[in-house]
Structure formats: C-alpha cells, structure tokens
Length: 212
Image 1 (cartoon, rainbow, N blue to C red):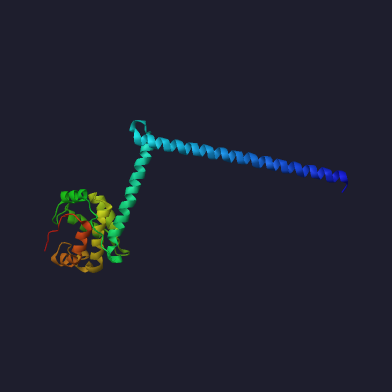
Image 2: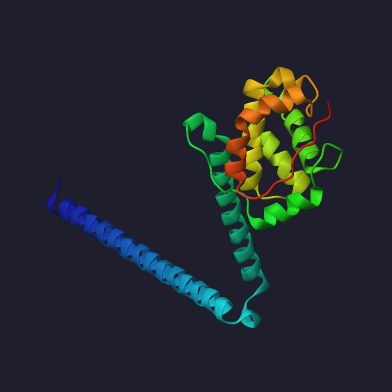
C-alpha cells in the first residue's frame, strides 16, 4: 500500500475509535442519569412512606393499600409456618405449644361442644373426612384449610387439629374414618393423641360428646 493509503487508513481508524469513545461516554452518562433518577424516586418513595406513618391524612390510597397487602402477606407467611410446625410435630418428634390465641378460643367457644351439626367438634370431623381421598390418602393441609374456612380461627391454631386428623388417619382410620366419628371406639383411639393436641392448642377448646 502507498503512503497516502496508509495515512487514509490511519485517519479512518482513529475516527472510528473517537466515535466509539464518544458513544461509550454518552451511554455512561445516560446510565448515570438513570441511576440518579432511580435513586431520587426511591428516596421520594421512602419519604412518602415515612410521611404515611407520621400523618395518615397525607398518605396516598395506593400506598396504604400496598402497606396493608404487605402486612396481610407477612401474617399469612407467619401463620403458614406455625401451622406447618403444628401439623408436622409428630413427624419430627417435637410438639408445638400454644398455637391458639385467646381470640381463637373465643371463636371456638361460639361454635360450642357436642356432636351436632354446627358444633366445633363436628366441623373438625367434617373437615377431616373431606381431607381424605381414596386415591391420595389424607391431606393435613387440606383439613387445615377447611377448618380455617369454616371457623375463621387462625391457621396456626387449625394446624393443631390438622395434626389430630393426621394421627387419626395413621392410627384410628378403621375406628373413625370408616366408622362413627363420635363413637366410643373412635374417641378412645383418638385419646392417645389428646395430650399433644391440648398442648398444641394451649387454650380451652370445645369437647366432643360421645354418640354411642
């Protein structure tokens, strides 16, 4: 190549390098600007959150709704963990203690003792039967969800009765699941787990009346 061609190639290469450097600087500036904008928005959101805590009148509806949703989610996770502990206590060799609150006790008391439809023991029995499937066996989680739906007690508290259902399925299915749930035979078998359930519940709970 001639000298003039080499000079032209050098000029073009240098121009390309300068253009690339200019583009990189532009992209960097854009990235910095975006980061600054994001930081400002984050700071503003934190400020608004503080303002919401300090003065509810200045809190936007959206922010309050978001906060409520987060609190509900946190409570659900907390109750889920406690319910799981109660349901699995026989599997890991430990016993959950005091899972039911005073509010749970008051709710259970409203349904009352006995064995008639609508009583708390009957609801527990119905949920236990509904949690059984010939194909998949017994589901403690399904029983717990049923109890919560029907009674509105906390999931952690319902987990104690879910554990009771699991015990009944494992040890008393012939006496209870395929027999009369409130019979002396069924209740006599379930008594082997009564101390564990009472310890898990931790408050006074309605009792079942024998039906034969």
